[in-house]
Structure formats: structure tokens, C-alpha cells
Image 1 (cartoon, helix red, strand yellow):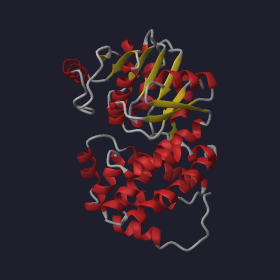
Image 2 (image 1 turned 120 degrees about the horizontal axis):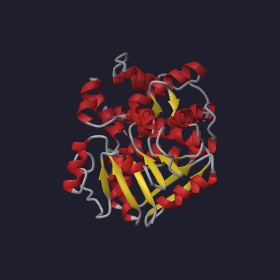
Image 3 (image 1 turned 180 degrees about the horizontal axis):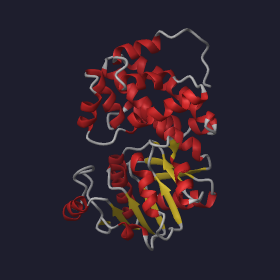
Length: 331
């Protein structure tokens, strides 16, 4: 039995904690609010974010960070991207667990860096893994078939997390392309907003397929410019996560896009979703990097324009289809 701390009691962190506890590990789920922890301890579920997923009897919850970090063999971070750097600062003075990973997707919004760059700066280490793939929290908590990727610059670290997470109908693969895995997990959320807008406007399945295919081309163009490997984007953390997030309403980013199609009130749409919409944050960083590297990312550019109130959703979709004709190229 392995001791693991899961930091972050949103839907995804809760689902991973449930899965790990169900797999026979000794798991402590940490939330930063004591009232939230008290609710979970009493209800034995996370009523706020994953209400239909009861906790295994062995799953512990705590508002004390030390409980989920000290003496743990592994620590898995699953907080929103905006909270990632601050949490690492809290971890910095504590004894380092042998194995660190995160399942957070996105960029650090203030510095516009990838999360592994933030971790290397704050913790001065490359010994970590990135957990990603095409997943919805509720399905993982239910024990439905799922495939994940454990990516690390250190093969032994990637393998350790793959073995810890692999159980029953959850299969894990290892990867060494940390950059490609992180880019895929961030970029697909922006494309899901675009797909949601298109579907919300009633543009049909053909338009959705075009957005997914061209969105993949953008993801590859952007990711390889940052140092990711092209093959990575053809796997689970690239096209796999992209298709899932663009086609199913379990995706908050897709639902957010559908709400924008009805009314371009970004703040109202975010309030209605009620949880973090990572794509709305990631697109700012993607656009800034694209400008710096002179990358052509038309779908991301139109998503940015809609979120900034520069372009109505219908006009944004039309703008994509009215671009100059050219040969199809992936990158």
C-alpha cells in the first residue's frame, strides 16, 4: 500500500483521490477551506464538485497541508492553474516527497509559463510527472474505462506514477515529452470553447469536425514551436483529449462556449458554469506566445476576440470560414 496526498478537492482532484483509495492506496485529500473539508468528512462525498461519487471508507480528508504532504510517498497536485504557483510556494519549505506529480492543465496565468517551468523555478527540480489524458472526473470516480498518460523527464518517475494509477479499468501509459503533454492539456480547452460556440449556434456536425481537425493542426503548430514532439499530439493527451473535450457536454469549456453562443456575456457564462473554465485563461497565454513567435493560430485568435468582446460569436465562426484558401497543412 502506497501513501499518497492529493492536493485540491475540486472535481478532478476528488475523482483521482477516490480512484487511488479504491485501488488500495492510503490517500489523504487536501482542501484549502476547512468548511469544505468538514462537509466532505460528514457527507463522505464532495457535494460541491462531485456529489454522486461516495468516498471509499479509507479515503481521508484534511485542511492541513502537512497531513497530505509529510510522510507521503507521493503527492499529486490537482488545483486550478491560477493556484498552482502559490501552492508550490507553500510546498517549498516542506520535506520533499519522493514522488511529485500534477494533473493540473493550463498555463501559469501571471508569468505565462508552462507548469513544469514554474515547478522547476520554485522547487529547483526536474523530478516530477505530469498526469494528463482524455478524462472526465465523474467517469473516473465511477470506475469507467479510462486511459491516462504519466509524463516525466525521468523515466523512473513516470513509471512510478503509472504503476500507482494503473488499476482495474484505468490504464496508464508513460511519456517523456512533458512539453507536448502539457501543451495538449491546455490547448484543447480553448478548442472546446470554439466547438461549444459552433454547436451553440447550430452550425452542425460538419463544422465541429472541421474545428477539431484544424484545432489539432493549431495545437501541433503551437506545441512544436514550444519544443513538444509532433507524435505526442497524435496520442491520448493531444487528439484524444481534444476530441473528448470538444464533443461532450461534461466539458466545462464546451458548455461555456455554448453559453457564449446564446449571450456573449463572459462573466455571466462563467458564473453559470460555477467552476474554473481553464480555456478562458489559457487563450490569453496562447495568444501572447503566438504573437511573440509569429504563429498563425486562427481558431485561438477568434476565441480570444469573442472573450474580449471584440467580435460576436457568429461573426467569429464566419471569419474562420471566410479566410483565404490555402493548401491543407498540419504545421
